[in-house]
Image (cartoon, rainbow, N blue to C red; front, side, top):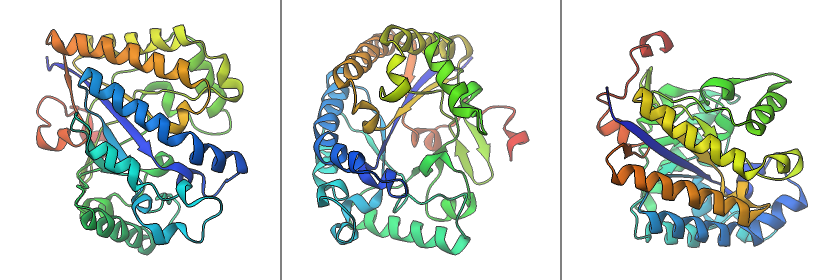
Length: 296
């Protein structure tokens, strides 16, 4: 049986993640909270020597793209965060979260190609790779164009309860987060020209009704998710945005720190392997699900 894997992916987007539903609160938090949170996250990963995939919205590196946007330029333009990330002691993967956070399941092929061309140009101008992709809002589409843009892997929708859809999806997913139910292990799947590494668990934010998700429940789910991956030889794929740390920040950081310490111990004992999303393109052996042919 293949060794279990831990993959952590982070969607770095600032206000681009809310461009179509923007509020003054979104702008305030993107300007004031995002940078110290990213600094704390980078320090945590350095402390435990755990690599992650940071999927970035390319426009964060394009100052011109921020000029017509509301609020402070700091909400839309963040080369300082990416410079700190690239300079971290732990060598993270820089992936793509699109050019300007457009929704690939809702746009034309021409629009998707334009966004991907823009993304490639920005990454190349900044000497950044673009091998892995995280679809904005996990809205899947135009996989052929994504592959043509030089991308090989992507994060698909969460397995298990995380695939709930429709008007009750948020309630179902919140109920799942409130209970110490083990997240499902993910298995890399060949989907057309790309390799899909589905999510296992979103480290959910703590605002609104989500503030009732108790830290001990989240920790139990994290431990159980990794243990489930160990039993199956699959991947525990944890993902989040820095914005998921905007509220109850100290609790959220402490929870992630606790999990990274646990994961580092498991890796040190040889029980798990740490992989970025892009690593599955280099070495998919033992990771590709035998059921993948059904998903093409």
